[in-house]
Length: 174
Image 1 (spheres, rainbow, N blue to C red):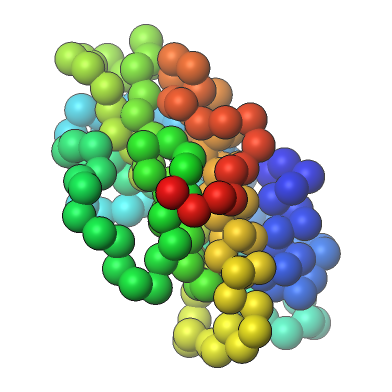
Image 2 (image 1 turned 90 degrees about the horizontal axis):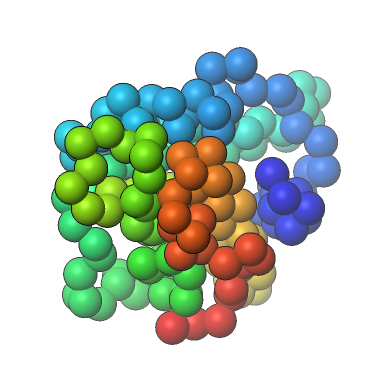
């Protein structure tokens, strides 16, 4: 996770320390699993990482997923709960989740006849809660965490030009 993502996790969870994930939940493991799954696209998202607050503190779970899409995102308007941001093919930021879509051409994606369309999701586990007056801060925080993982995944997959993802999150609405 980037330093920006670490700060964003504090906005989302209120915590600055987290429990360690399983060794199965790493960017390298996720990239390998995605490369093995390609070119089959799936509507099912696969767990990439889970983030928990420390034992003995209020429970909070954040789930990071990856998926393969058949195509680039369409021009259909996003659901009203999302703000569309200028990152990758499309980034959708909400108060309890964010999704970064990016295209990847890589020698690690065997059988690639073009670009793989990858989506990284970050979602709050458990019951929804009222964002109160933190709507913009929460949307930016979720988008920042999703960007950090997406960029790490693009680098691990050796995507050309890091899948079109900027080095830092761009939080300006599209």
